[in-house]
Figure (spheres, rainbow, N blue to C red):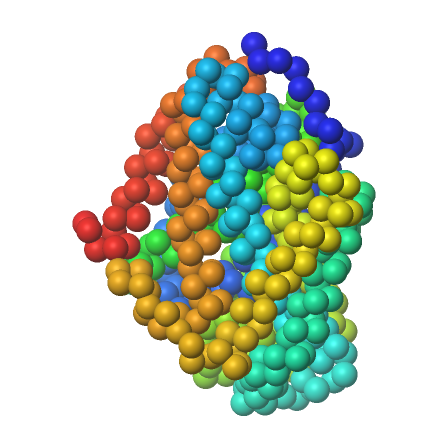
Length: 456
Ligand code: PHE
């Protein structure tokens, strides 16, 4: 039996709060901004089915593993990995897994904050009424105006980073609990209103068809679908692990994970069902890229009854969803600085926040002054901007790699007694989970990697 630990950063008040916080981490720009545009770029149908398979067969088992590791270690992911490896009398070198996660979270936040800034600026645009009766060309030029102005992007990026670090500095618990309790259900409700509008466009079935009818798929697209399963569930970098470390011992991890994954998936699918009918009704391009939601949803807000209000509330909630995710991206790094360097939370948050802000400049410029500065890596990608490169390396490589090693650690490094004790679930559930993390998940990740580079 492992020694009893307690987290020096505190504990969630109860299980519901943990589920809300983890759902807050999972549901974010990934569901509403990223999922629709990558589904659009990769041809819909098959991509979506593979993404769903990855959620169930890879994401869910890894989420269970990650929460379990966190709760057993009760420290930042770096120290948790070190402590658990020691408990199991294994090589403390596993600590690098924690470091890779910290790096991934930091890099993701640097661009996540810039995109959250777009959503913030859209609150004010919508409120000002410029989308009233707008055409597809109109929304397009409004979006282009925004992203070609580095100063505006920089201002919003700065504001979002300050908001994020302010919450992290106060401790994740205070604030997050309330935000998620009310705002998540509201976001859900608004998405349903937009889906109902999408039904009135006359192109609803075309949208559904695009999302769910299978077609051709490439190895690269499969990697993107898998990478997104990690990204959207906040897996592979320690965010869910660190949240698990604040969970008290008596709660069921398996049940909680199922609820989180389900809520996250439903939000993504609703977003897709809201956006694609609008895309087809207005003759837009499903593969329009990162601007997709900003070039489609305003059309809905400009044409539906009470659209200005719905739009303002929607973008506000999107910013909140991004905020509750951003906090979890950086919590592993902040928790580490507090544990190992004795920093106060405030000092740790300010230090890491400034660094992240600085790296974010690369993404700010990716859409304007550095638009043509691109990079190609053989077998992986061609002509990627700084933003594209960061997104690709983190979501499609670092997170799946982190997840793969988390699965290997939980299944092959930890003793069976340890994982059985920590999960405390019924034997059938336990065996299914263990089989998945032992064989299915690692193999699937490796096969997808190999397929993406054309090796199989
Ligand atoms: N899951 C978040 C989203 O979908 C992003 C995220 C990734 C958060 C990794 C934490 C860790 O927006």
